[in-house]
Length: 385
Ligand code: HMG
Image (cartoon, rainbow, N blue to C red; front, side, top):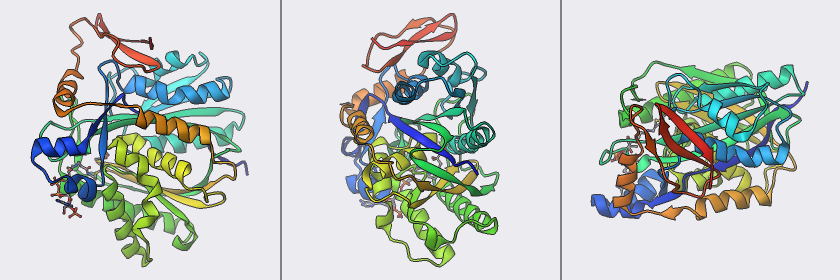
């Protein structure tokens, strides 16, 4: 059978960063609650000329530059930060990246889960046509109300993956475990720009989805827990993956260590939540930091509120290490420009644009692609300055 999986992967994030010590000082919260209780140190914040389209295109640019566009016949963008109820984010991204007209494009939505649905669809397309590649991008801006309990778990990020046959990074195995349940734990009605959430319910719904997905995985012939070498979870805040890992250990009767999760959460501690991208930012972090992954099996757990969970495994290929990729990711995080709480709050409010007022957004960042404003109701995207 043809091996199919992730051939290359690239992460991007916003141009600004808010240190959670500053938010803690502003709120009068003990910073330990953020660093230890939530497992978060920073959150990415977008500049005024960035949004989910520019994030997605910026993440994918290094992949297109490295591998060309010829074999990409499908572009999937998974997001819950879409900017139009009809037009797919993927259509703008397709133009910005210069992909071929003979390419199907679509946007996928189911909270933080949809990139995994995209990955499964991509694997199916490639298995049927091994000569084709699918460009899959998970991109999101996590936004909650200012001064809410969820505020410190905001963030932003995008991960682009080239899915193909005989992959260089991770071969995805065929067995998956899935669990869907209708739960009102987190949602964003179409008249809101910030999410609504029942925090405690969301944590228990996540854990229920994990154990349910594991049971489905096991029932369908998934490998036993002893044959899994690494774990990578959706990380709305990194402490959530620790809670989940402990619950799964109890559920399957295994002895896991919290240290299992350190390398897969290094980027997430600094990005904050990046919704659809969060699991794959965790995978990027693992691939960039763990130098003993060749031939190892990684379990990935994807969760999207509302809710859908899916657990699946991949085996890391021998040549997975790339100093260039790791340096690019470190640079994206290290070179963000710090903002103070006042500026972050201004940016949070300014991020929303009405469609009935023309606006020109000045150059604010050094990103490869920019949101230039709204003209006659339509959003404008251009190459960066
Ligand atoms: P909260 O009420 O502010 O926090 O909300 P808390 O009081 O529960 O404290 C959090 C932890 O910090 C606790 O630890 C405290 O003990 C600890 P725990 O008991 O949980 O182990 N703590 C401290 N630790 C050290 N030093 C201190 C200190 N003080 C307290 N001084 C909550 C927390 C996560 C609920 C909130 O931030 C929230 O609502 N976030 C958004 C929802 C969320 O992220 N849910 C996660 C599961 S749902 C999901 O993953 C899907 C999602 O990504 C969306 C999608 O699918 O699209 C969100």
